[in-house]
Image (cartoon, rainbow, N blue to C red; front, top):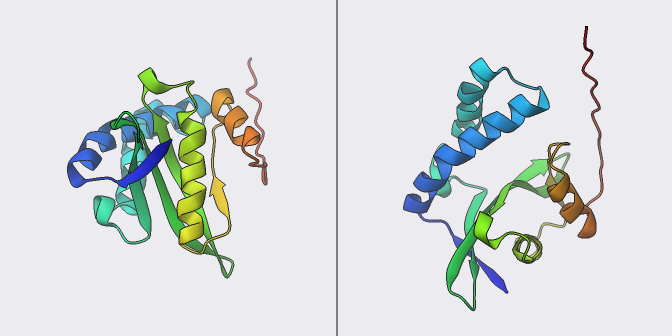
Length: 158
């Protein structure tokens, strides 16, 4: 089993550069941002969402730890947001370290997220997943997440 442990400032500072870089690359791959502007846009997004890092109100950043091994296996970040007069948890990021993937840690982390969200009195979890991220999409579907909005695109070649 895993447990969610609040992320320290030091852990956050190690997480942030790769998260910004990965987010920029995902938007470039999806065709949303140009390679020239992606890093700046990603950094601006993170700065707006997490102005005080892990101490930002309504933002919850955790390390994911294997309780039996006592080792960090990943991280998880969600926010509690008010949308249309109802609260929801929005999952911004979940990462399982490469060495621990395909062992059920992602599923366990999402189950731990559900418990944490219930503790906060929130009854809905929403997330975004890039269309090209098939492993994540399969995991979310397996856990009961359903598409609520789809945006399709086609690249035309000359």
